[in-house]
Length: 219
Length: 317
Image 1 (cartoon, each protein chain N blue to C red):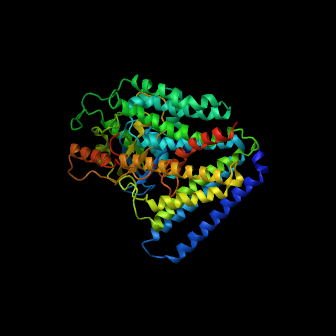
Image 2: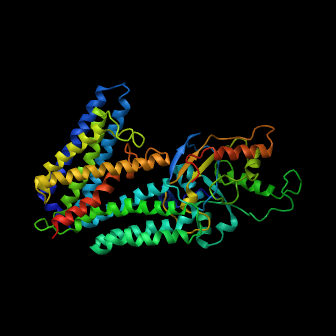
Image 3: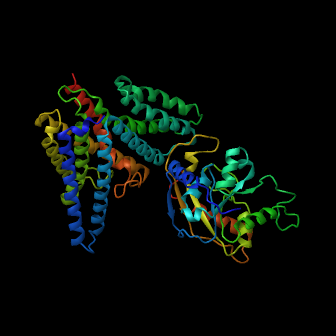
């Protein structure tokens, strides 16, 4: 990808912040240009744009979303935005391959990890929604293993949990018109995969790190 | 549209507000230099943050009102929007309320202000209490979720009544055709806002200075009889002294001001009760030092409609 900042990026970020009225709390770390993987709960189509727009502009310029190919390639506008503004990394959700067990040699998911690691490169950060699909917003669902493998591959990159609150009320699953309520985005303390840590243990720890950042009780 | 510019009495009102802001800024500075490390320091910092916010709010308000009816409508429309946004964010709603909320924000609210703009009084007065009232419950019901149905419908209805309908009566003052007062309605709006907001401020100050007996400690520990009476009476005195800017006699002005103070107090009390019920302190963090927009205008939401109708009943033939 090129590092070119698209002229409408700031405008889109301002719109994202405006619609979501997002209030950002850096509770476990400070904004930093260091390479990171931001991972958050997923309950709305707005999640990515809001998280992206809440980052300071110099960090935002180097932060790429991991995006589902089927969603972002559906219309020409989305494809254009994903390619030219967000510099999205497309993952094909459908290609689960022959086996989902990464310990087996035919684990096709491996190439997804390769793609994410390539996208990180030497200077980029990523935005990832490890639940893989949007939930109802009531609780954080189980995480897919990509985050774990990425953490193993790149131990130098901090994995920053984030909780997006209220976006499921602004634009819930199945609706296409937003209601302009206020939202809250909390960044937590960066995690790493500990030596010898089992995949499921890490994924559960990461999931809890996200869920623990929630401030307002369930709506 | 710029008729307000040539209104000398309006200039006097603005001048008075300016002097008040300058004096309070000065007091804030003096207090800040006098108390360096006392525990009272947080109160003083909070006071100074409030004064800074007042400068900004007064500037925005002055620009809006000077630009005529359209400016006032846009300003109050934005305030309604921000207030309802805070309200709906913190009041629990469910997935089934989504479309109703969308309509409330993007159709009912703009329509209410549009009706004032085109001076359609008849529809302005019934649109939300009558039409929205018969629209909201069925539109929530049609989404098929019956859990807490009555509560949800009531919460949306109450929010739109307070944040949109009630508040819109403040700029609606500009519609009134008072004989001998034509073209000066902006002063009436300013009078309402000054008395209402000064009542809030003075109740806070009196409460901090001499407040002891709590009115409803469970609802708001900061509301005391001393604060309420001191604040309401001094704001009423201020309002009485401003009679020259209104179509009222001094006695009428005293009555109007007292009414604004009492209703404003009620508004604050109701909003405190709602906040206590939800378990939060402020409705938002939009205005520095003030909590949220809704915390600032709760008194106005209760005072504006009654003030509007009293003026309309007694002074518009």
